[in-house]
Figure 1 (cartoon, each protein chain N blue to C red):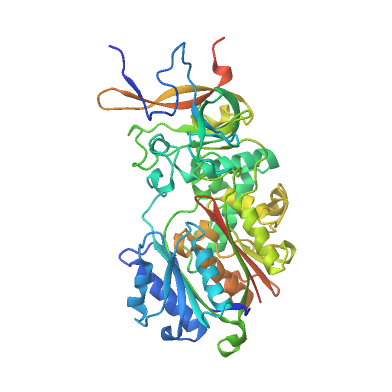
Figure 2 (figure 1 turned 60 degrees about the horizontal axis):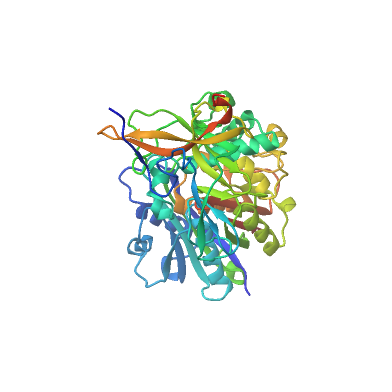
Length: 382
Length: 147
């Protein structure tokens, strides 16, 4: 089986773009990715495209060229980009295509995601009585985690300060004003212990990746980035997960993040100790803390010391969310994970500018997590 | 004039609770593997059996985790009062049964503690225009009880 590599990346800035449709942002991201790869749209043989707000994102072909290309729509909530990149890579690996594309785009209205619980298979009373909020889950999970593993409120604020600081170095990020730990700890509580400046917000943006067969990459680039593995897992019975009116007693079962992470490391033949830079789902500052351990990058509770020492900052031992993460970029759901991969590709190429990590990084790691308890991991290397 | 009260949904908790039918959450138990579910479910997510029986759940448990809701949730689906009062939510471990998510009667996070004893109660989470109180289940710190 041949290997899939990334030869082009494109990112439309994340933020608010009044009057600009999601499809136009997607087309801009695709054109950037094509130019980066040095290929034209008619050369693309197939692809996958994900969006939450756009019901048929494959309509983007009308903006890019009506070539008859098979462009398939995909959706897995916050893990959507994990699916689009996994399927594009699979199309290359199996020999279906020589050149494929993964695209994500979204344009969310302001405020927390709201939907009818019945859409998620949950009874109406759960929404009526004010329980159907994903933010409750994030508050409750980190509250329990702080209790069990000695994580402080200051650590949560340090994570947020780091990500806003990284976003300030990223001209395509949304929240580019640095905030101090004190300012973050003074912002209003939204869901104890999480405060306003510890949450990401839904916004707008798009991203695209061009993939090709490893044995043809030399035709396009001197620095292909290898897709070493992709994994997606849904929740198992007994895991503490978002949107659960109840869950079974007994030993708490590992989150789908742990399952996806282990599968991705095993398939790649790469271990957590090999990871040079990681982009982890930071829906909130607590999520980044928990996801460091769930992805095998540290032990439970070690985050308190690692974060205080600056280990996850750009110059640290294990830089996390170097482009500002979701806190700094917001979350256009369909595009969010492709933004993570875009950042890893820049870091591995050594072209991340002001936020380039020192040394010669070889291995990058990306992680997504969201409702209804689904996680996707992609491991990349030079 | 007495206030009219209605449950937010049928089959969620015993209604109306009285001395012969004390307040309990209505769950279910899989007749094949014994998994306890809430709300009551006909299909088992462990063994995929489609046979279950009603099971009234324990009215006491311990607080496993909690958070607060400090802004008004989006409506719909939330249909609580326009004048928003922050509330707390948590998971209560009912020993040997399950962990259930519920509103908590104590909204101050500094007065809640992981591991504390909790008891089941009902709260009027909203009032309709005609004055009818809509009741839902909640858990209260057990030490608030008058002896």
